[in-house]
Image (cartoon, rainbow, N blue to C red; front, top):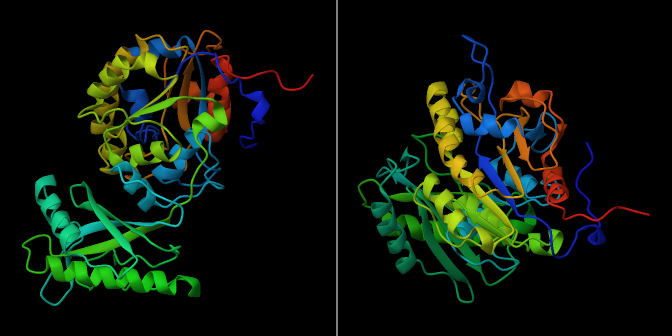
Length: 403
């Protein structure tokens, strides 16, 4: 499977159509043993089916055959960045997602607010999933109380519920540090040990600050400690404007997806409260950008719950607001997922993901949008990183290659 390598002079700089990318997180599924249909094939989706009848269909391989992707690399692939080359840790995505600016060499790490007993053992790795208000109070206490060594800047910010993020600046950091989350209860947090000798100083500093954090939060009812994971040393990415000539915007409720969008230079004009509101915000600013990315988390969340019917319902709800997006008549409308999250597995999987590409240049092959119809579609099975070049071509944004 060839990966995306577009020569600079192939991308048309200026002119061409508008592209909308709708990502239904975790869209792909597996056939239900009772009736043989996937969640997408079981859903009542009049909008997506009408689009399918006028679209090219296919299946995306997020990273490589057999590789189960995380959300970060899967989205990078959808944006045209080979995830095996452009590697980024979850901490950087979380930091960017909550609006923290990063510079090359910064170290970003995700924090789980946790409950520890008086002996320092983990009672709840997520502190009972506190409300955002309770969690923000704990993070504000950390922001006020942490005292990094001279020359080191430490910033902490709340992300959502039990999740927070810490960013360190002041020297080149090494992110090859062991997570402190033991992934189980009844034991103390792990030490942030260096995984390579070169990370020893970074690990020592992280350990010092995590110790301070535990002292600051000690005595809290639910939030009485933190667990660190997802370390990421930041490096700058070339923007989608630089690579593809696209002025891009992201409409996403969850911080991590805004983070990966900001990483590749997308604007984040507003943060929607619901997916339907995201569609409305996109519509209001439709003319302001030539590439729009809109993200919907619910199918993935219900898939990870192992709830087949709830995932079906989430897809049906998305179908209703996608009608609003389709009504804007973008030159290219792509609907797909970043990866599969089959409810029968209750986790991400490696299975190829259905994709629909609607444009006046499409070659339709089916009247329904589902894994079966996409398997026989015009686009075939192809790497997700090549989706951008297809969208650019359908939007009239690529020059002819060669004489």
